Image 1: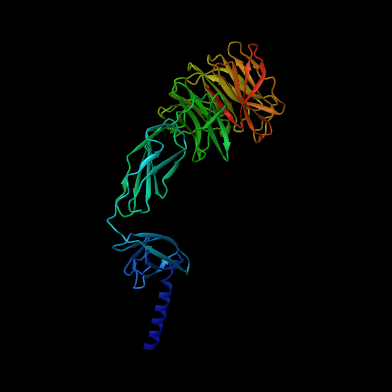
Image 2 (image 1 turned 90 degrees about the vertical axis):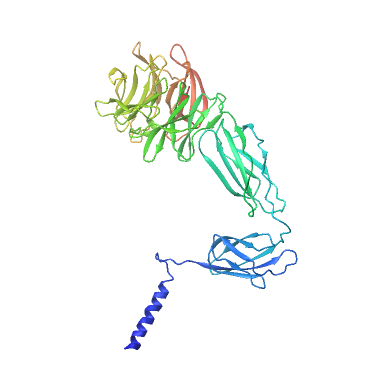
Length: 500
């Protein structure tokens, strides 16, 4: 019986030993072996008792009388081996450990003929210290020397005067670094740290340079890049400057000259919210929080500044809200009596009236009416209509209102428009006038807005197929109210314009 029990115990031990090599998750580690040799660089004589260790850390071993060493059972991957021995300079060698294979490496160590000297403090080569007008992509160049001819490694620290971001660039082996996506009109501070791996890092002085001032721009436009909408500022000469990230979906920019801020919509998780930023795209802050901007279709929803730039109104389905541009003071101004969604709004310069467009959940059965700041309806511009309506923009005096309407009165599940034109409503005469007469057949004129002097209109023109390129145009307005025959393309491949 004792014999049988011994057999059982032995089998159990073997099973346990076998299983103990497996990790709890059922996977096993994969290992390899590193072998090598260390010799003197001058006579290639084997060196004994040289300390050899790796990064990431594994075993530490010493060479034998033949200068050989072996590191067994080391996980596969990339390693940097280092040697240490009195009287010789340390040396590094890269090695790759492969599965069940032996990786070999040879070190040739140079005698240390004197006390190690640290590197010199790095000096800036470019940009020169206190340089002005640097581009948003700037190459930093510096120089440092080492009397022992050691291999030097650098770390660069960069910060600026616009925010608290501190960027570090480590393990640099060359004496240059290209900085990209810098901010306009900013002062940058940069410092170089250098080490020879044997002495404490040596710091340079702090160098500075300043970037170009943001150019004067009058237009805001949007361009689809990959799957995201990206906002650009554009100048009179049609040069454009990207001011929102490619990584975010941002659209419907609106500039307020009084505050010199741009408000826009940006996707934020599963919701869309209003953000504001400086005119150069810096200092982005979120305005809306508990109540996002929302409606029947994010592409056809809009908001409006007040004239002083300290408040914004925006819709959330059937409700219209007012909020401070700092995110404070949220209050409901108005709620539609019939449950229709509010899609667009525009606040008059004097703050006495707000034009709003409402529609059903499909974007149709649209109406345009005007409310006061207390939410009381004071006039109806358009009773319920068939087809798509949009593009609300009040004139400076508040006596006229631009809007667009699909005169084909077409309705579809994808909100396609067939023949959308620009109209102007006169509050004094209560008359509506179509102001575009030279629109190309098969296209739509959308998102109409007055120019700053109201002598022109800026708008989007695109094929009614819904997939063709969108272009931003402008045209003059005659006193008679008819559109000028001249329709000038300002920006190709762009949409959602703002001209301030």
